[in-house]
Image 1 (spheres, one colour):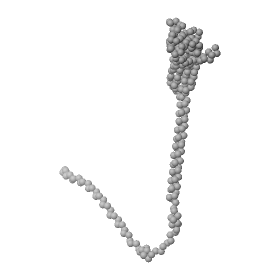
Image 2: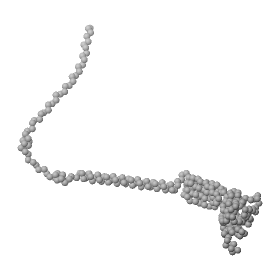
Image 3: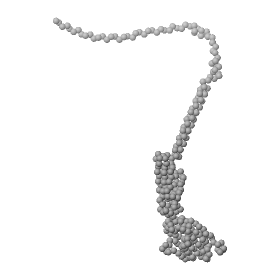
Image 4: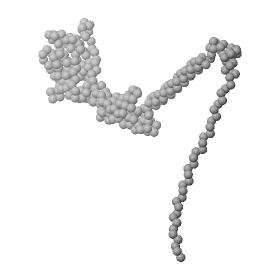
Length: 301
C-alpha cells in the first residue's frame, strides 16, 4: 500500500463554469503514456458514468438519457448542459490495476444573466439612478454593477442597485456572472444643472483671465512711464546750455567807439519825406433827368 501511495500522482480539484445549453469538456491533467493500457473511469458523486479500458468504452447510464461521451484521451464530454448537470465529477486512472491518478472536477452550470435596465430621475437637488435586472429563477445569483461618470463603481449581489448624487454624464449598468455579461449605458444630463467640475473649470478660467488682464495693463502702464521718463531726460538735456555758450552769454558787451564815417552818417540830416497828396474826390453820378410831360394844347372856350 505504501508503494501504491508513492506512485499515485495525487488528487486535484478544479472548478469549471459553463452556461446552460453549452458543451463541457472535463479533461485529465495527469499525463498518459501513449501505448500503455489505462483504465479511465468517470463518476458523478457515487454514480459511475463511463469507463474507458483499452479501446472499449462502457456507459453506465441509459442511452436515452446519455449526453456524455468519453474521448480517446480520457476527456469527458457533456453536451446540451442543464442545471442539474452541475456537481462534483471524479476521474480515476488505473494502470495495470493500480490507481495512478485521481482528479476532481467541480462543474457549475449557470443561466445567462438578464439584460439590465437603466432608469434615472432628475430631482431638485440630486439625480436618482436605478440599475435593475429581472431575476429568472430564485436560486439564480449574479453581480450587478453601476459605474458613475467619475469612474467609481458600486457592486452588489442583488437585482436592483440605486444611487443618488449630483453627477451627470455617462452611466453604465452591468450584470455578470462567471459565464456571461450584459450591460446598458446611458448619458444622463438633467436640465438646469451643471457639473461641479465644469463650474470649477469655468471659475478657474475666469480668475486666470482677470489676472492676465491685470498683468497686461500693469506692463503697458510701466512701459509708458519708462518711455515718458526717458523723453523728459532727453528734453532736459537739450534745454540746458553748454559751458561755452553760458560763458559767452554772461560776458557784457563793451561799447565800441564809432568811427568818423559813422559820425558823419549820424550827423547828416535825413532827407525830407514826400507828403502824400490827398486823392481827388470821386465824381458823383449825375441825377437822372425826369422826362417832361408834353404840353397838351389848351382847349378853346
